Image (tube, rainbow, N blue to C red; front, side):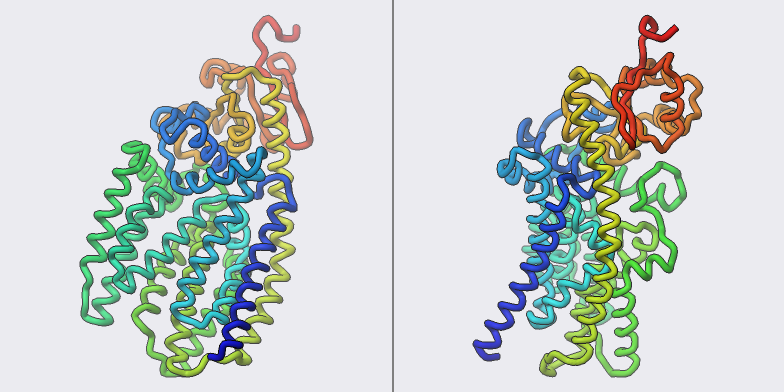
Length: 497
């Protein structure tokens, strides 16, 4: 390759990366709020670490395991957010800087892995492929640790394939500090060596015991040890088990399954390319390499999960397109890589799909930011008008992240996941659910005696909202807008006669 071609390729790749980051940066700063609700929790926790150190009492969730047995299961993720808190007095703006940082970090890791299989100018196209998935595009706008987990996952799989056990041990040591999915590295190590044995009659035991030992050590070194084992049990075991067995804990839409048509449409590039791979395999004598088999094995693991819970399509798309890159390397062999008709066709399909996705992404973003702006207004009002130290009831577990972030002087029910309340306070959780559904005839008694609170918030999309609005004898509306209310439970002497 000539020097001129290298320069041209470098410029092309730089432009693609710049466009990629600029697009998501523009999207971030097109709204003053976050796109995801958990984003508020993550930036708040980073702020707590900055102010209180890593060992502090998480008092903000009074009816949760967090109150007595808090474990920051995304500690490393939060640690990397802290520097951005010094760049702006606005905690949400700082969080948006952190999102862009993680986006760039993922792009770099993704390109490094892709570059091992395909030329750099083809890698630029592969950088665009995941954006055709609406799930990937949406998650990429969130301040969520899943992006950091994806980085650990793809680098870990590459190290397993190439028997880079020293680097693998370092990665496995830090993974438990970053995300609850760290145990998947053990599964992938076993999968990798099983495939290696079948394909090459070789079994590299060191990969397995290095990952296991480093993972156990990483769990032991966690700043919230031994509470982190409870988080592993709840999020790594109980949540998937309850999801599979149909236990209704209101985990949120990301754990729901989607209709087949919607799955196909939301991940259309993945399925179109998978169909192309099958045809190539049928029509040619392509010998699939060991690395391709491993990437497909790991993709298959997440593909199964994706048909159980929508959130897993985020990682599935990343793994699939690396698998595709490895397969293309097998198919091309020693042939020279050129810009061909299929390459141009892929670009045209992507442009068409992504143009359609922009509308869906825009609609989703508008819907989420509308709700988040409402949460921010409520949180700031409560910060000004409700006395410090009060516990504030909220009808949904997903209400509290923005409140904790913008009104940390008060306490709340539960945050991040209902499993933390259900596991520690199962009876209270049932009543908590029944309150929202309007099944409690005297809600004021539950607020006062069970949850020990005089203040509460609820959206306008449940039966509790109507109960409170219609009961001026026991409740006083303190704040109201189009989406919800903040109310006070009236003491006996203050009730209307």
